[in-house]
Length: 359
Image 1 (cartoon, rainbow, N blue to C red):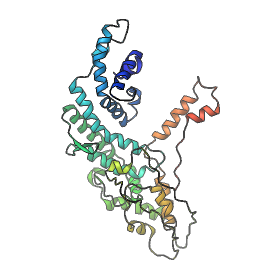
Image 2: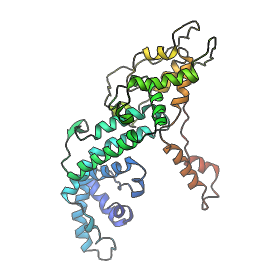
Image 3: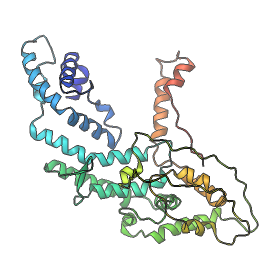
């Protein structure tokens, strides 16, 4: 069906007419190659069919009539073999309810302008909770049920695959890095998030995870006696609202009525203070989910100068190589044998490198 709508000129024309009758914008389903690049691809395609179900069903009726009167249309007589039944439409609709959670996780972990390694454990934990068969699914904040057996089986298989890849088979060195980065996130430093103890085959505890961070701090970052560090003040940036998937929405902690929390402090650290920076950081209040971690550390670099350097090192690591791979893919398309004559302006407009993390 996707190939038909994207390659048949007559099919696109009839589809757009049906979409206009139902007040829908003209659009075609995402192509197959766009659905094979990650977990979110199948959601995008399934959601298009769910949103355009009425238009597609009208197209099924109109196209059958028009195909009989257009024998010279080579693709007109083939569509009826791929028409969805009502049970298949139900499967598509319920698949969207399940796939929304992997889609949200992908969008968060593949971000290139925010710290991501620190949210791997919370996001995967929330994803496992959402995919568990006992969890009630929600769509647009309303409970929904999955009655199709194939969708329920797919949900269970996806849960098992995610759990195997990101918990059971996760290498110990990577788990330690994730735990250190999570500890350096003021929102999750207490490890109070869904499935927080599922890692390392259920043996991970908050104390053990924080212990890895403390060990890294003591070994490589804790200042020696008499050592000082110079820091440069950073100007706080105003918070901008975007239409992208937010961590608070994904974790279910969004509260639009809350006033924005002041996340900074300009007080310089007293060099004679005996309290360890790491202990002082752990004693600070846990921040709410919807705030900028990078801005928090920029604002606290006077209070916690050495720990801020450690945070910059760990939080600057991306959770996914997707952003880098996209850049290489774009470069490969720009510098192919067929595009050796493109000028600098055209290349710059096609390649948009992500902003680097600055703490």
